Amino acid sequence: MLVLAAPCAAGVVAQPRIAAEVAAAFVVFCLLSSATYLINDVRDREEDRFHFRKRRRPVAAGELTPKAAVWSAAVMALAGILIALAVRPALAAVGCGYLALTASYSLWWRHVVVADIVAIAAGFVLRAVAGGAATDVYLSRSFLLVTSWCAVYLVAGKRYAELSESSTLAAGRSTLRSYSIGSLRALLGASAALAGAAYAMWAFTRPEHGIWYELSMVSFVLWLARYAVLLGRGAGQAPEELILRDRVLLALSVAWALLFLCGVYVGR
Image (cartoon, rainbow, N blue to C red):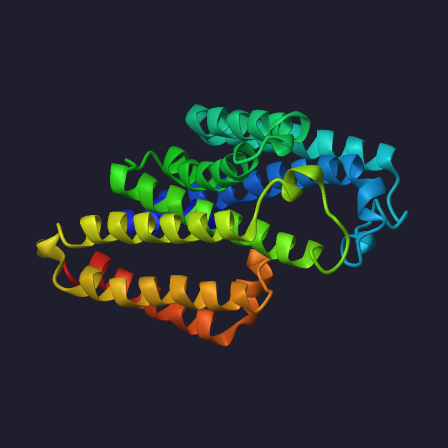
């Protein structure tokens, strides 16, 4: 869904050509991300078999052979790049960058403290960049800053939840044991503060759009606060599941989206 961010913010997503390009970018990154997750599942299959939740993954559970997973990943990666190239060369370049990033993460960055968080967050940012690349929408500095710090916030939250779980269950991977609860809390606080500051800097410098963007700051900050509360309760290992299951987060997401869209379309 991150590929929708840039064209929605620019107010052009309703145009038929833009909508078609966004739909293609959506398909491209479904294919590319699925390919990288399959490769990771093959690589982590032995470790996943001892995890109470990850052992249900098809490769770890023996429902999908490693060979079939690798071939499926290769086909999806190739198909994703070819579709991206047909849409716009810039999208294909972002797609190749995403594959290179995820491959290097599997080989190196996942074993390096802090770099593992940055690499995963960069994968989220590249999804948002792909939306701009597919539609030729300019990406402002504020857009990139907010997206980047929000991505760091979510990934740090994921590490925080994993570390909290590993202290009561299994030990977890070696990189995870290099973190501490305190350091991750500090990173969560810093990334949330920087994301909020970047969003405010953007929202309060667009008076021509009325007060809608400023009002959206309220739901944005409350969303970050609510997510922090849920992390404290032990949630957050799967951010996408948490966001879709918690009613308060969903309500705040809808409120933010409505206020933001009012700024885009009503405030002009």
